[in-house]
Image (cartoon, rainbow, N blue to C red; front, side, top):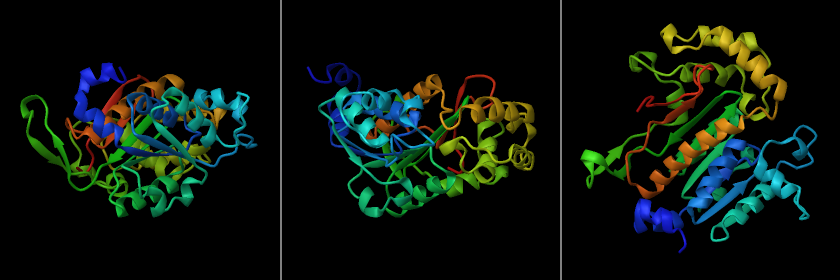
Length: 315
């Protein structure tokens, strides 16, 4: 039977909601995007549209060097694909013929309200901070729930904004009750007052705030123009020192894990883990069953140990 195993796990109602959902995936060059999309396509999402216009023959990002195995599988076949988006869409379609997979050949910076119109939710990956900010504003204006994610070397994160008041069915002691949760925009989450933070939190958040303004192309190209600038921005964060990774670890991350491999500096194992966690959150968002996690997830947040952490910033 189609989807028999997952029907036993989350039931017919959830599967029907998933089958009626339409996802918009932005940037096919990202390995984290591919891992997340793979999980959602195998789960049986109704339709998935890949938005990307990066040529497979790009001199700065040739497909022959990519570690995105789903793009590799299609681009090395006898079929003719011109972009990362068309190649990824073809591989995803092969994974599950029951899902409607489409490709829109445009850039993240050219997204419009019309492109978002039919989407249930939006997920964008591996972009510049300017493009992340732009998509956040666009989704907010259209009241579209959205996820943003990126990875570089041993560090990865995703952010979610599901709206001002998202309704969901509780679980555990709250099973059967309809509850609500408030999310904030990306802008507000990154500008949250340090005084409002919990007593303990991941080091990944302070690092993200430092990178956001000093290395805006880090997650799209792996380029860090000024490592010292990142370290200065991190040191200037008005928070507890325990909330920050050490300067030594940050320097090693940027110089040894990111710069030598740019732009293909994503780690396959980390993307697999983080993509699985994110896909599960998307499923919860679509089904409205179970409390959504916080609005941030960080992996490898201290740049030493491979650990994941959820944070609720500004919520």
